Amino acid sequence: MKTDWRKYRKSTHLASADLDAMETDGIPLTFTIKDVKYETGVDVSGTKQDGIFCYFMEAVKPLKLNSTNNKILAGFAKQDGLIGKECHVIENWRGMKIELFVDRNVKMMGAITDGIRVKPIRPKEKVKPNFTKDKFEAAKKANATIEQIEKSYILTKEIKAEWEIYNKEV
View 1 (tube, rainbow, N blue to C red):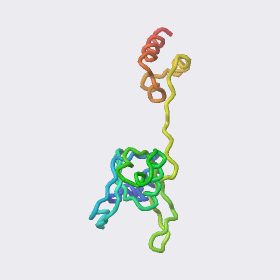
View 2 (cartoon, helix red, strand yellow):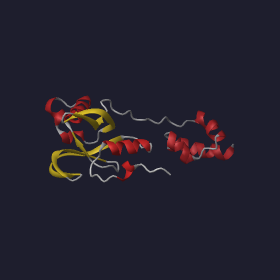
View 3 (tube, helix red, strand yellow):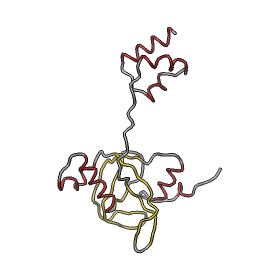
View 4 (cartoon, rainbow, N blue to C red):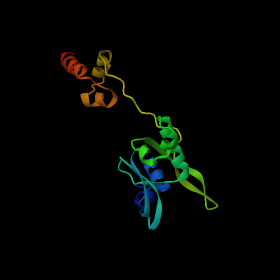
């Protein structure tokens, strides 16, 4: 077994190495914002920092937001219908779904480094289609369980009941 050092680095907040490790493990980098706060004196991996910090609903470390990411989130708020200064109110960003990525060309203090960016295009919500009677035969041939069907389709109570009857008869 090969060991990826990035999985074991100690850090209090998301860093590009964390995202790289998550990507290597096939973990999607799409998150839902739980809260955004301006905080002072936050310990960011051993350094006290002031800034805007983003917390997620998913089990992932918080992210210290920079100006570039703040502008992208404000743009998303505008897309959501907020007008003027309301787009820039960080409390209005709660509930947003965002996707992060590692930008390998961030200029910081005269050097090029890796940095975390919010993708400027919002992640598409995957909408499951409805499970309908015309899919019964294919599901039966595949020996699909109700749990497997529910992972890929929306089932109404009526269709679920009809599927159970069909599944017993055929």
